[in-house]
Each structure stands twice: as C-alpha cells, then as structure tokens.
Length: 117
Image 1: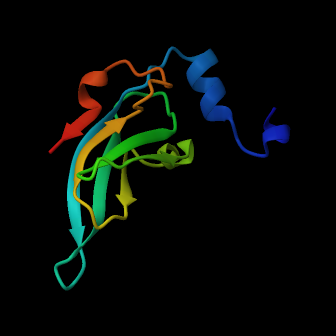
Image 2 (image 1 turned 90 degrees about the vertical axis):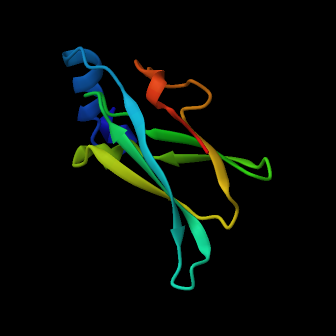
Image 3 (image 1 turned 30 degrees about the vertical axis):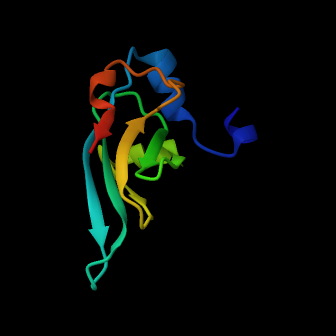
C-alpha cells in the first residue's frame, strides 16, 4: 500500500492496528494577524494534537459575513510536532472555528474543538 500511495503510512498502521491510540485535536488559540500597517491580514489558528493518533487537520472557518471555508492540513504536520499553527488569510473578521465540522474523524473529545468570538 505504501508503494501505491507513494508515502510512508507507518503512522496509520501503528495507530490503528498495532496500538490502541485515540485521536484528540484541540483548538489552543485563534489570534488575529496584522501587517506592519496594523491592518488585518488573516488569523493564526493553533491546533494541538492531544491524543497519540495522528490524523489530518480539518478546520471549518466562518467569517462575519457568513462565509464558510474548509481548511485541510495533511497528517504529516504531526510527525515532529504536537502543536501546529494554521495561517488563514482573510481581511474579514473570523467569528467561529471548528475542528472537523462534518465529524469525519474519530475524535474522542469534541469539547475542545470549537472557538467562537
């Protein structure tokens, strides 16, 4: 399978079949990022991997105008990190961020998956 995928899938085999690991991602912070002129240029969203099972990051981001976007980050970020900052470029105000808004991942603690302004 690794040859066909063209990537190392040991994280998948180890977490799902060799160990009894669980997935728990949590939002650590959501901060506005500004340029040198003091204008909003986006947000920095910090996601922590609190469980042992690495999975991709899927974020639902909602802005004040009601616009909703999905941001996906590959699982590779967890190979050497326990925390990852997702940079979300926008000039609009972000009013809500949710990890895995469509409940596609096997999250064990959804209580830390939502941030609202």
